[in-house]
Length: 170
Image (cartoon, rainbow, N blue to C red; front, side, top):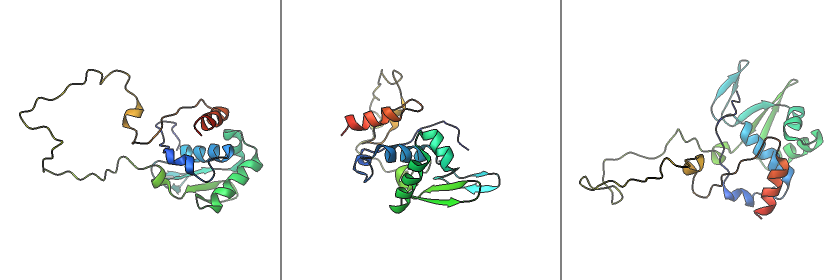
């Protein structure tokens, strides 16, 4: 289900999150956001909805670099503050990020209404359009990021980088 393509949004308001001063909580929650399905799907006949994914504590421990006990503690904290739910079986767990749509708005579902009414921001029919000569230079994903979002990339296994970045932005 995970294709390692695309990106997530992380709003600056994240710095006000109640667990933001705990690097292991930040690390695990960002990891959950990255792993969660961005659209509904199926895995071995099981319906996995947007904002959910299948994992286990041992897998999370290996992929995040946190101990199994730290993973368990972080998940329990996230459950206690209604950030996630966990449905466990004897083979795996389905983690659901409860407010996934608040954290990651689905860009494919535009809420903008198309109207035929002209506005002051639209150029008049006889107005020459403006050309931006830099439009093809250094184009990146941050051009489409929402206002207030921060574009940050980390190398795989960069928990120290995340912690350093967080400490620098306090």
